[in-house]
Image (tube, rainbow, N blue to C red; front, side, top):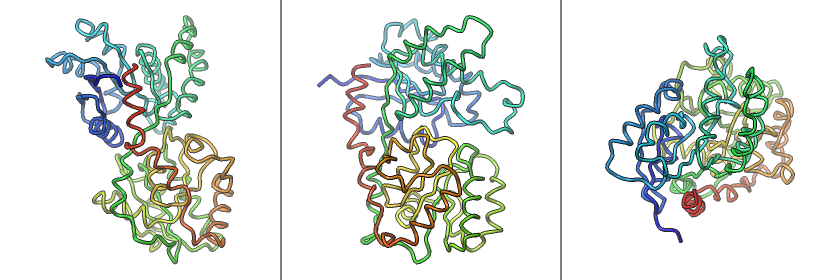
Length: 371
């Protein structure tokens, strides 16, 4: 076993899933991990300016670190240039929760309208180039990022430096997200049975990339077919309420049994253990932690046959859980709630346990030791 390392974990966006991952890694790891962070707001400014602030924070510390581990919202090339007086020879790594090259931007975003969104993708590119090791939260994420880079660099007029792509690929590997799934166990009901009226679940952020519009369209298709259901619309809302959810409140009325962020983790866990089906319509999920949590709690997933979901649920073994369009998704849900197997809990719950920290921290620790 390698000796424990002193690791500086640099997180410019210390909020939500980024914060949970950092704090849980710190808590479970055998390495000594210090968190150097900024509040999770103004993400675009974080990608530009956090390198300066966080470099100063690192240099102000007396501790000498064996590894600098950053996440994707840091301009790592700038950061490393600013700390080179002390850390020029220290191993470095970056963990990609997401990347702006493959991220589906809302067409309403001002930077998209002004063709400025490429700046953030380029920061991700140079970050990967500058790090000694590059980790991604899923196999899908690794392949998507590396596959998108050649066309991305083609958009520039000259000196596209495609020779750099092989070096990025060579030092890249998937390191799936760790989750505190055991935290859900105390709230597991003694016996999990389907609800008399099927309960559908949304437990993602209320943002464009999670596609609330598509989710609501799917619900309306179920209504048109005469399928009875309730729905719990959970999740964080960082901006204004999606117009599609506002419309759904009027059209679905009494069918909506929960709306908005759960008050406590206990409330959130109980909703996941209670829900029957999690239909997913996301435009992007580089890992899909909320989906994994729901499956762990016994929800039947209905998934688009793309993104990171086949990393979690084998599409060849479980074709009944995958769809290509919303009409197929409605078909899958209708078949599920009318089948004889509807009385059985989802059999995939135990498969998700591999993402619990107790089962993946050794891989993390060994991987970081070799960075």
